[in-house]
Picture 1: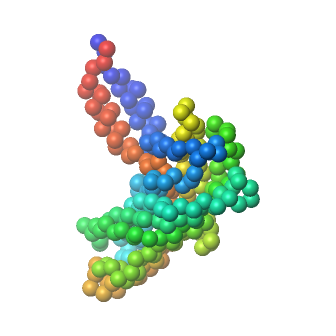
Picture 2: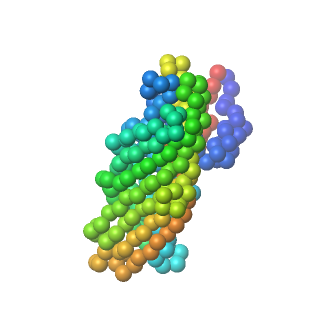
Picture 3: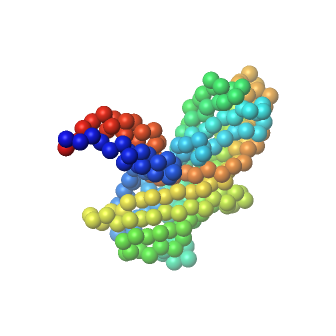
Length: 241
C-alpha cells in the first residue's frame, strides 16, 4: 500500500491554476459533410470566472461594481454558406441568463435576470471538411440583447461584435471521435459595451452609465479549479495500492 503522492497533486493543481480552467467535452454530430454544424445546438457560451465575466462599472460609486455571469444559448440557428461551403455565417436568436452580483456599496445585491430574445451573428472562417482535426478562426460579428421596464433597470443593454466596432475574434477546434462525431472546443474574446439606466425606486435609481470591456466566452463550459482542489484534498485522504 502507498499513499497518494502529494507532490503529484500539487503539480496538477499548479497546472490547472496556470491554465485557469479545464473543460468538459461537448460532442456534436457529423452533419454529413465531414464536419459539424456550429454553434452547437443546445450548448451555451458561458462566462464563469472573475477574469471572464461582464462588469458594470461606469455610473456606479467608486469601488463599486456589478459582476454579471452570463450564459448565452443560441436558438433557431440559420447557417448560410459564404465564400465557398467551407465558410459559414451563422445567424441566430439568443436566450440569455444573467446572474448579477454587487460589490462595494452594492455588496449584498444579487439578481438573476432572463433575457428571452437577443440576436447573434458569427462568421466562421475556412475549414477543411473531412480532416480529423479542423481549426476554425471565427468572428462574433453581432451580439445584442436588452431588457426594459425592469424593477432595477429602465434599460440594460449588452452589445458586442465587429459590426458595432467591438472586435470579437474567436477560435474553434473540431476533433473527430472514433464513432465519427466531433469534440468541440470553442471560445470568443468578446469586446462588449453595457449600457444601463436605473429605474426610479430601484436599487440603481438615478444612476446610468456605459462600460466597455473584453471577456472570454467558451463552450464547453469551464469547470472551476475549486472542483479539482476538492478532488485532490479527497484523494490525499485515500490510500492506493
